[in-house]
Length: 320
Image (cartoon, rainbow, N blue to C red; front, side):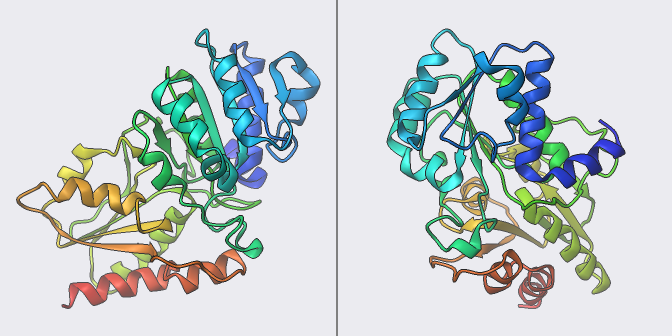
């Protein structure tokens, strides 16, 4: 990985980065299967179908069946990549995920594509699924939400190395923000990344809104607030050692492109509720509502997730 590849993966978008990671893994000789619910090209698997037809299976528009087939293919321990839109991957197939990925611990790497606000213009049938909450309620599933193209690429490879079920939540549109401009970082599931150091406030986020957190930190710094930014790319298991290091901060804010119920903020709050000393914790995200359809920028603004709104929320709570 280098800065040129970081720009390349950014321009490919989230699904393009996914397809590149899967194609390169097969090209490198990794034994695996790829299963899609009639979304091969949307998943970036065009070259996979052409060059590795025996590794690819299209089950049609049947997400529940896809999980069962993936479980069968993984019976001997072979990892299986399975993809669909996040709303259908997580919500429609929840019972099969509970049985095959949770209870049976099948070696399935389920990719929820276009999660968060990516498809907001299509309304709640496609946008902002409660996928983190659903997956967190099922024991034994690693949950990863990468923040840019480089991290998507590394997350897919890391997931293939895990012997067990993984859910990867893809957010962001056709062009992704570049968080890792010099992508020499290592990716370790369960180990958060401090993108910016600070001592007063800490902004904790995951997925494409990490870019908003970094911009919000700039606004806070201009207002005299030393602000750390943390990419909590793994929601389950959450990085408890990192959270423990923040107990002396004046305030932390979790920033969720998700419902507040059961999301990253909930995972962080569950850790802190058992601590004798903890910082003031504010949760920014979708609060028990169905956002109106619109562009990603519009939806972020209506839900208080723009950089300026995040900074304003933190400042208001610091002045309480």
